[in-house]
Image 1: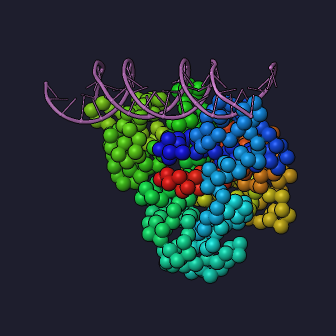
Image 2: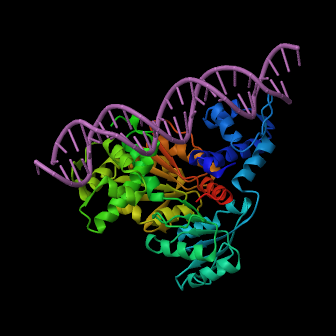
Length: 210
Length: 210
DNA sequence: TAGATTGTTAATCGATTAACAATC
DNA sequence: TAGATTGTTAATCGATTAACAATC
């Protein structure tokens, strides 16, 4: 389980494995082989076995994988067997959308506060969570042992917010601002570049790529 | 410019090239070499030259690349030299966030209508754009030659909305529902799986990956 | 036991990097 | 012209796929 050996490609496939295993579990499926998973996911059976064996031996020869067990293992591998205390910075429409996304609560991301610099929204509530003054961000993060900061502010304020989150001691940043943030290596960064994604779609349309 | 030869990795880098070239242009930088771009972007100079040469010869030996020209070329390659008529399906917080994201307008994605199935919001306006009844979606898409449909509905309704958009004749779908949609090959699909992204962040935090 | 399917090593493929001739 | 930097071919690296022995 050496970090240095885990490629980004695998990291991107793991949540997808989890999603499909969750569906199978809901359908009451008890057992699945790498071949069946291959048909479902579109990865080769070989790749699926390789991916899983990066983290351990979860199957049984001649039988396959127990869905319940594999789902639990992948949750553990993904770090979804714990709670993450989370704050959302920027209480605009996007920040509200993220905060409302009740899916997050189900898997342990607890949003404890929102932050904004607009006096008109400070003190209001979004989905029962209070909007604080962004001036209090660093202290709040430190005092409440916040794990993750979600950045939903405009591009120009994003780096400064990131610095504040890092100073407060977050372990990870989920960034929605269209900028490549500078973050120390001890903090994990995942950026969702919506405009990049839209531009990739534009490219695919132009070049007729499915 | 054979489609079959363009790897997904390049498609994902192109919008990033565009972003940085835009910044350089705003700063008034006239000329840049692959080596300077390399320091800025963190890709090797060799990769940058390879990527660009997939689409043509945009530089000048002994000199480098003209920022203005290269920016324009990449816009053209990405298909950002035209207008895309766009509809957003699902007028919840996420749909509103996308509709408000005025950045999109700048580069030619014109949102002409929103759609929802909630009678309480049908007829209202979001960012000056009217919310229509989703029952009218297929006709609207067909009658107005809509290019792109953005799916901001819950998981369970997403495939049906996608089918309707395809029936209406969209060229691309930008999907935010946490599901892998089934779409005919003639239509391009770009999915933003927010939960997958968050789970990848969780993984990175657990495994201390920057 | 025989059949099935994993875990794992070996082979292949594709993407990235290095090198350098072409040329501005 | 000399120096710089591209465009492009060749070498390397890493990820995916194939093959098969281990074993349930």
